[in-house]
Length: 383
Image (cartoon, rainbow, N blue to C red; front, side, top):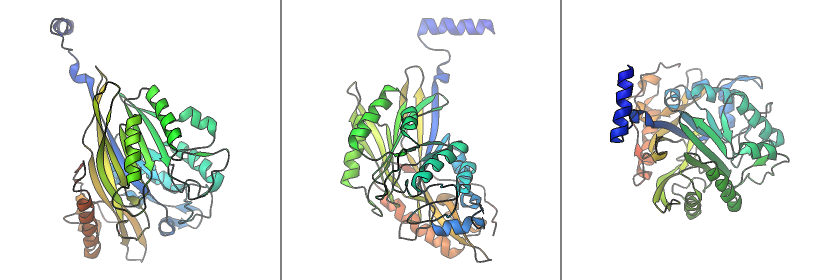
């Protein structure tokens, strides 16, 4: 054994090739999901005992294998956890903490919290949401209990394997609901973002990932304002930009910027992932995308490659059971596109799902991404 090691070292010295070169290449799979909403109908569906216990596990039964397959699974939490009833949907999203538990069990380990509903639960809504996510072991960023917490944990640095990632998160507004002292909600203020990005760069992560709550609701294409800000984020050092808020899917495109050494850098931008799960019924709001990003790092020269994004269309299925109950479920469409009878989906719902995914694919025809097909073992219906 010692002879083999000695020969490897000699070979490396003579020929300039590391005997452990294969060990220098590392990959990390990131998975981003869209808006996680909590409408009144969803709260009612999960209710076991009024104001006491709720079960959201069935919502994620069919998507959990996909969520758990990633190294880091990230969602946009567009609601608050006030810690006590009343629990309400639109316009003030206040959900039971049982939802946080279900999300964690399903495979989410990171939630972004800066959005236009961050202040829906008032001061306690912000603080208890942060504390709940801490309790269940989530990475999270975007809202903070106080300035000291933001100073200590922002930008958020996440270590995964051989990767060091910086995450930033901002929202365009809080629906006019003021942020109560001492809590903080990150809002889109360019001077603030530029300064935060400088701090992120100084921390020398492998990648800077920015999650933006922006754009115009229900618009299938990004606005000029989104494009302009995406370009600025790229210029300030972003390596990947993920968008939320419109509640519908918008294109995935690239912006180009220059590195410090004047080489060109391509930055993928997913302008809006649409809804992951919600009670919305407007056209095009009954689903969204998950976007898979593979990072590839060479630990010899610390170079990083971001592979072309892949998207996974998902559909919110409002399953009607025989006892008249409505179950809200997230369906990875391609896994059940040909046949959804294994999960008890009827022909009417299956047709609606196919209609939705055709529209999504058409909207993404010119996107800088490809679709990833999902193949899962047939699930057993709980109907």
